[in-house]
Image (cartoon, rainbow, N blue to C red; front, side):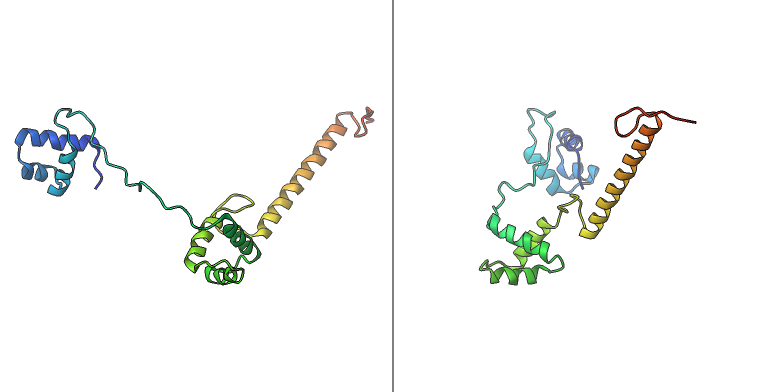
Length: 168
């Protein structure tokens, strides 16, 4: 259960009144271990000081042991063969004298495939879908350009720069 700093301070205030840990824990429905954890962090000299959770983020994370070249080769292979899985790509990379495990290839593929290089989206993206979208955008731009030229010609200006006379 996640308790706020306000809740934790109220535990300490109740304990300061009763001086009975068991009664305080029963009253608030918390375990003694939880109470002791926060009691160690509590400063009786400044009871209004917030009792915040400590970050669970690791202090250090290990750096990647793969070079940019390895990742680049894997990305190119993945582009050439998008249906290949981690095992087959790992075997192919070993043929190029790049010893790499299937698990490492899978982890790197997760990063490589996480964003589509064309639209920046996530999930399955096929080049044909992007080509179709690009063609549709081009088509609609051309339609709008033709419409704009027609509107421009109707207003009395020809497309060659000379004024046109409208006859009714």
